[in-house]
Image (cartoon, rainbow, N blue to C red):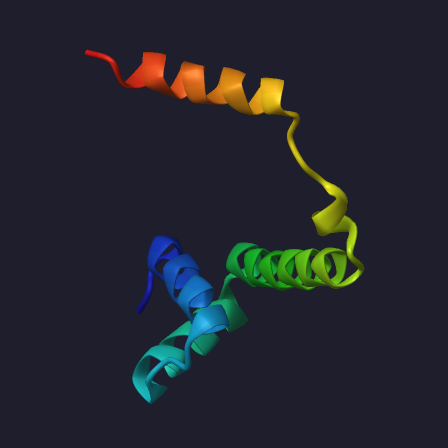
Length: 83
C-alpha cells in the first residue's frame, strides 16, 4: 500500500506520462481511501488546466521583466551563489 508521499509523487508523474498498470492501480486504490490525496490530485489537475488556459489566452506573452528588474535578479543570484 502506498503512503501519501508516494501517492502524490505518482499522481504528479501520472499527469506527464502513462503509469504502468500496477502503479496506476495502487494509486487508484490509495485515492479511493485517502480524501487528502484525492483533493491534492484534483487541485493539481485544476492548476494545470488553469495554467494552460492562461497560456492559451495570450496573457503569458504580455508579461515581461524590465531590464532593471532582470539585472537586479541576476545580481542577487550571483551574490547568493558566492561562497
